[in-house]
Length: 312
Image 1: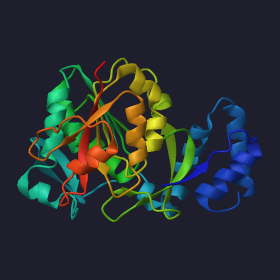
Image 2 (image 1 turned 90 degrees about the vertical axis):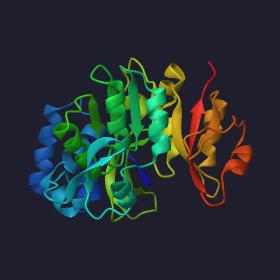
Image 3 (image 1 turned 180 degrees about the horizontal axis):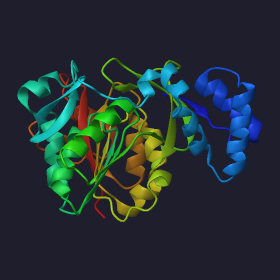
């Protein structure tokens, strides 16, 4: 994900020009500039995030960036039972192909969710994809609990909302933004199956937010799942208040072959220990550093899920 910082101190005309050029790819026309001048006069307290979302929600943006447009899924998705819950899955999605056949997807993660979440608890799914783990969490916490799904890809967010609506998961709130360490506009690259990737300048513009600002009024957090494709360090940086306040267990991905180690070290510094989540649903001994963690990861599975916990 390539980051472009939002110029927070722009005046009205600079803001209008910035959003036209970056989000719509053109200079503002006379009528458009006058329209948004009037809009800003009538909304003097609007935030940069909210103003950019006015452009992102426009028909012109949707036509130029179809992946980011909120659209009808039509017959491009079908219902499947995975991990004991019904969800909509995009047709032809190779990531979930075996899950559709076998009826299970990352059962070791689902097992941790069922063990860690209490009835009435709160689950944060940071990088929800199509919402399998959120649906499991929804069933566990029940109607008195809460599930917040943050998913940057608009098509995936639409699938989660559709599943939640049609299968009665009223305790799920879907937030279609990208998490980082602050409010800015980023270029999010998405592959052909809707998986978010961080591959330089290619991609669609999305708004980012820090978790601490996105959900400032949480009363509890019992478990976090973190799956943000290499952007973990930024997300952790923007969630420090939430993490330090509630000290929840955190499920995340780890690979010894990429740049994800910095976020692991950050969580160590915040008082966490880590264990490897094995595919047989057992946990390794606690690891105090990434060298020990690397030794536990089998060569046949270079990317594994890990569980962070705090003793206090």
